[in-house]
Image (cartoon, rainbow, N blue to C red; front, side, top):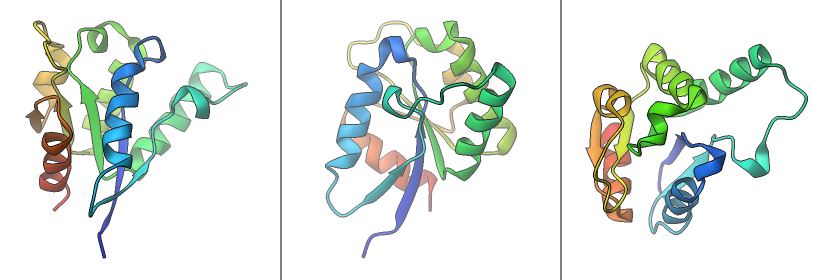
Length: 134
């Protein structure tokens, strides 16, 4: 029986293809079970002010075993992604940076904070999660 790994995938809703790709890889993983604590557009939190939203996001990150974030440049431009990365750092969560295929420029914030950086494929992401959640 596989061990459940709780993950949080940081992303911007305007650029949710990265999130959807990583989520699909994890949903289709053989021999591994993942529980997604991310706040996807389908699970968005309605009716909260910024302070309440930050508290809710921090709680989701607190529960995760590993924090995953693409190194795409939008990660450095989004205040929410910055907040999520800093929250993960402050909580001591292992951070897995994933470099999207063909990416020429990476978020300095993400690459600086990452405990491990992997390429854009399912095996690399799954192996990175396994390594960071031993």
